[in-house]
Image 1 (tube, one colour):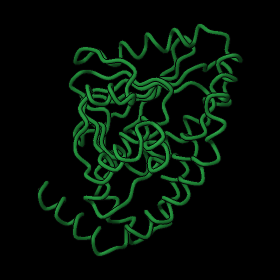
Image 2 (image 1 turned 90 degrees about the vertical axis):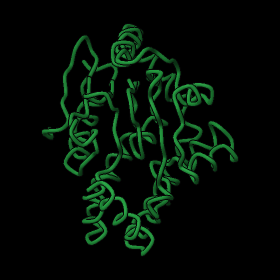
Image 3 (image 1 turned 135 degrees about the vertical axis):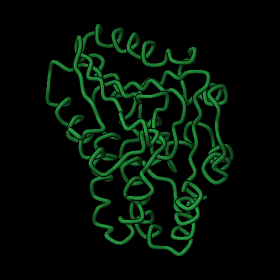
Length: 250
């Protein structure tokens, strides 16, 4: 595992925690690899019935590590680690639950679209700032989000990239239930226990029935986005946006 992704297994529940608190749980290539390996192990382990994602330190994840994106722009083949994670995430066969506190930005927000249950604190904030960075949406969000909220609202969320607060996310159907601040993990774990107590095969088959009709479209969107995203990383717009972002953070 990565130093910044922790894994524990309790009562049939695999808990994966983003633990890079000083960077608001920004995800590195090593973290992507660790998450991919963990999800693959879980699918092969009959003792694991549910996977729960959450972030340490009051944030879910601030998205991709921008410093690494600057490096990836020079060596696009490094995108393979990201794409491998997204492929496993979007086709994951076991129930996937997220407990969200604070910021869920970029891939920290798009991965929630592929969770089966999302529990969020009332202070949680989702944001999809791809266009502001000169990029395009990823994780098949260009396909999944319009299916959930309609074209016009998806355009607003993905193109303007403004913050979607927890109440809005709940009203739009991006979040199942809201809870008080610091309670998201505890509430998410309770839901995970409920799911883990159900007949395993019936749960898996029911998830497959819910998702199978759109699965090919999701994978096609994921691949198309990936090709365009890789090209955008080398674009002048992205380079300027990254430079502005990094200089502002300094």
